[in-house]
Amino acid sequence: GSLRLGQFVIREQDASCYWGIDVTDRFIAEGKALVGESLIASKAPRFGLIDEKTVRAIADWKPDFVFSNAVLQHVPPAELSTYFDRLATMMGDGCEAMIIYIAAPALERIKAMSWAYPRVVLARAARAADPDWQIDFSMVPMDADGGEHRERNVMFLRRPVATAARIAVGDLVAAY
Image 1: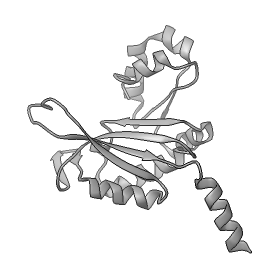
Image 2 (image 1 turned 135 degrees about the vertical axis):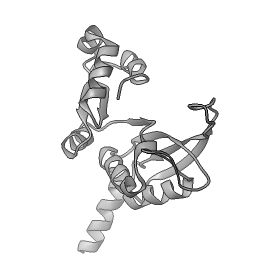
Image 3 (image 1 turned 60 degrees about the vertical axis):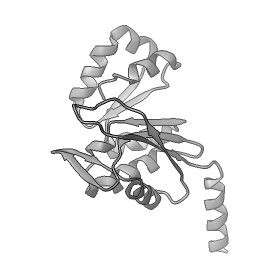
Image 4 (image 1 turned 90 degrees about the horizontal axis):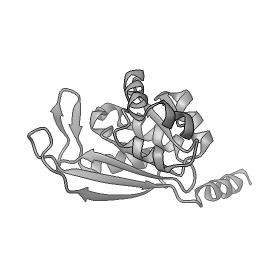
């Protein structure tokens, strides 16, 4: 995205330890302008559009942590499976994700391209993408958002380290 939060992570990470993705080059360009050429040169963050090639490259890179802020609210309900499938692809064993989203007791369209989600809907979509994920939720106290108070929550996803071993053993037993 525009690196409003990412700029702080980039500054604290070692070189080549940040990958920022978005749906449009415009936001990535805004983010690069915000952080400046010298920080980009010294920290060598990577950027890309959210597509299958980039998602696969991130998976091969094996991130330890994925952070998604103000993204899920723009994912239409019909595309939740794509959102969580991409996260599942990016997240290797031991990887954790923190997803900040707008919460509501029931699915609610709050603007033309914004949705508030109940936990049960997100947990169901996440489980469909990866049944081994450990899923937790937490509330985030927030001030008024655009004149309306909207509850923010955090969804935590953790892929256990043992997942690969369990799959391999399961495949071996099934093959035997």
